[in-house]
Length: 208
Image (tube, rainbow, N blue to C red):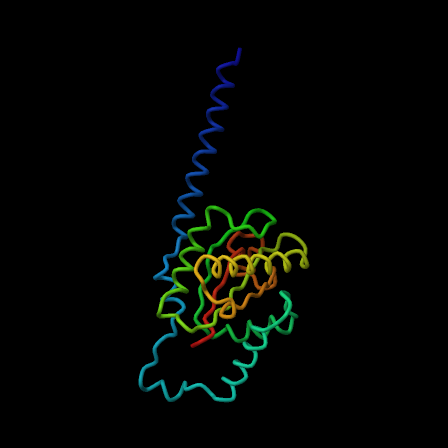
């Protein structure tokens, strides 16, 4: 026969697990980003009349950027060299971007069920006429747990998974989605390298 203290202990553990799950779901709900929010984040910011002349794109710089994008768009392999990854990071630095809390199954490139809605909102956003004709970077990032080579490969496979989902489910042209993985090299919070905040997908609009 089970003792009463044992029953209380089991009940307490069960209740604690339920409360933890509820808190996790609430956090996930708070992190949800709508398609409209993604569109707003990725749209080029309008220039005032006084600034438009000062910030007019330099034709030489624009030609260089276009050349890099075209070359990477037509690459034959999934993996990029370190130099190519840094070129994309340099291009993306001043462009409209958004970090999305898209989680994957453990040590896997499969999108978790809890994050499917976030990917679907991304698909709706990139299908919006306001972003038509743009080229986007889909960048995968991991936390600092695990080896460098493993995380690099994992981040690349996760970025490719997002691209396949967007092309298969929303008909977005594959040539308009440049995927790159940064592994654990560009942590969002370097002071907390193992924090889940570092595991993210960043989307950048290169046309701005």
